[in-house]
Length: 102
Image (cartoon, rainbow, N blue to C red; front, top):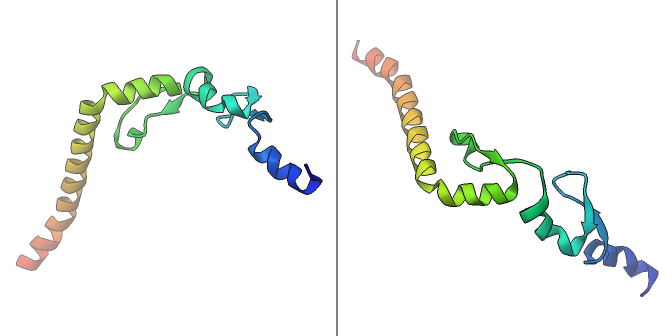
């Protein structure tokens, strides 16, 4: 292999030792990255529905289980979030509507 291609090879090489992309402190060969993230990485992640109120935080494998089991809970959180947003918008419109009536 020519030296000019070596760096490109290292960036893709499945046997290159790399650190965990979640910064857990562990290193392993690139070929084991997916397995590490799915089964071994101790870093806890927030549920993707955190922004609408889901409080779950856990490892990647726990998160996958949570996502499978919490579909209904996430649907309810989404509905509540949308209702709060709609109520907020109505509250902003009420003073304008009252002002028009006067």
